[in-house]
Every structure is written in C-alpha cells, then in structure tokens.
Length: 363
Image 1 (cartoon, rainbow, N blue to C red):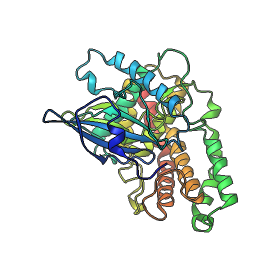
Image 2 (image 1 turned 120 degrees about the horizontal axis):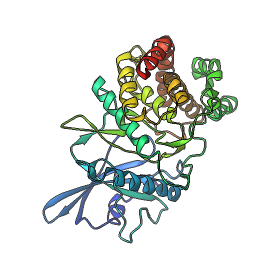
Image 3 (image 1 turned 90 degrees about the vertical axis):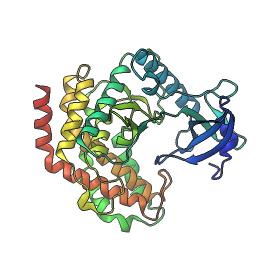
C-alpha cells in the first residue's frame, strides 16, 4: 500500500459533514490504518472513524464490506428500541455517491464509521468486571447472529483459524528461513513443534459452523465510560463463518493476562484464574442458551489452542521477514510470539482447574 495516503482527500469523499479539519491516527490495530477524522459543521466539531483497508491482507475488500453491511444491518434491527441503540452497533457512513467503499487514485480502499462517544477500548484488561462485560458482549454478538439469513457469509480470509494450516505455514517458514532468523528463534520453534498434536483438536470435534467474529481481542469491545457495560463489538473485518470456540479462545488469550501482547517481562505473562472465571460466566450468560454440549465442553481448551495458534502466526511472520503484522521495532514479532507461548504454558498448568470451573458453571 502507498505509505503516505492523502487522508483528507479520502475523508472528503464520505457523506458531507462540513469542512475537513484534521485526521489523526487512532487506536492500536495491527492491520489497517485507522484515523479519527474531524469536520467543522457550523462551528460544531463532528467526528468519525476513517480506515484505509489493508488490501494486501484483505484481498477482497468488496466481499468483506458485503459481510459487514449484512451483519451490521442485522444487528441494528435487533438493537432497535433498546436504550442507546445507535451506540450498540457500528454504523457505516456512505460515500458521496452512496457506496460503502471509496477507492482513491492509488488504489487504496477507504471506509468510514460513525464515532461512538463516551466509550473506550482498552489494550489490557483492568478488572474482572471488564472481563465479564467483554465476554458478555461477544456472547451477545454471537447470539444475535445465530439467525442471520442466508446466504452464507464470505470467507474474508480463507482458513483464518485453520490451525493445522497455520502450523503448516510455520513449518514452511522454518524450512525456507528466508531472512536467516531461525537460529534466533530456536527455543520458540522447538516449543511449537512439540505442540503439533494440539492443532487439530477443535476441527476434529465436529462442532457446528456459526457466524463468528474471529478476532475477539479484549480491545475489540467498547466499554461504556459511565456504566462499564460492553456497549459495542467493533472491528468486523473477519466476521465470517467459523467456530464459536475460536472466539472464546481468543477472549481467553487477550483477557486473562493483563500484560500486553508484546510484554518483554515474561514473568508478568500468566493466566489469571479470576479473569478466566469472569469470561466463562459472562459468555455463558448470553451465549449459553444456543451453545451445544460439545461447544461448552471445549471452552477451557479453546484458550490454549488459540493462544498457541496466534503464537505460531507471530513466529511465522518473524521468520518470513515481518510481512503480515505491523511491527514497531526490530524483533517485535518474536517478542509477541514469546508472550503467547508463555501464556500457553500458564494455561497448561491450570488446565484441570479451568475444566472443573466450566463444568460447575454449566451445572
């Protein structure tokens, strides 16, 4: 992608909001370029979220946006009549010609959303109540999409959570070692290879396909500033058919450990059991009614699987020369990998207790 886009020109292509003032980088996402755009309308500031889609990753932005349009329309219809309904679903802003995508002269794809006021995302969880609220919001999100009408959503990124294929990509990256980094990641490679048997567990369980978010990081739920409620699920780029346990597992990965994803002090990277309990209780409060027995049985294991999968993805990208995730310093991806694998170890140490908790709550 062009590294110096004309953000102002792109912002002006969306529904008229007055005079463009400024656009500044916003959020901490790894993939797309996100800006908070400010317009002046008769002396009043108007804000919206503007994003340049990374079409090197999302190779079919049109299909992705069809998914997002369908899902947000369905969610908005379900939320109609609820208090603060306009804040409970992200709302697309059309372009001047009524589309949801603007393609600039450099071939960049842009979209815009209404800005949700008085709500915040957090890169790291700060309390068990926040964990509970995030899990409750994601469970509610899944519940509302159980009856999304046909046709089947597009696969935004085919095999996104196909762990065996992710592992095969890692093996290929180890074999090719295109930038000569395998020697620097020897310990991480050995750990990954020793856990290969984990990769196929969920795919072998014959679980039902559902509409899932597929990127349920803690910072993809906006928490209301006044009440702390999980008010809105955001970042819908990877909403597509999948397993609900991929979503729950990623919640465990990003919420049970308050350390950041790239924490350098690995002694801080551990699963905090009260956080896990809050996730289980919050998630089952909203999703428990539609989950099958088998889906519930694998809740505890899903956290280990997805944490391991994401760790292998960071390791693969590191060995491949940092071609997928944005990096902000040398070795950033191997640092991310190390935090994931340390969390896997912590989960393994508490696996039996986690499974007993899930069983007790189901009863």
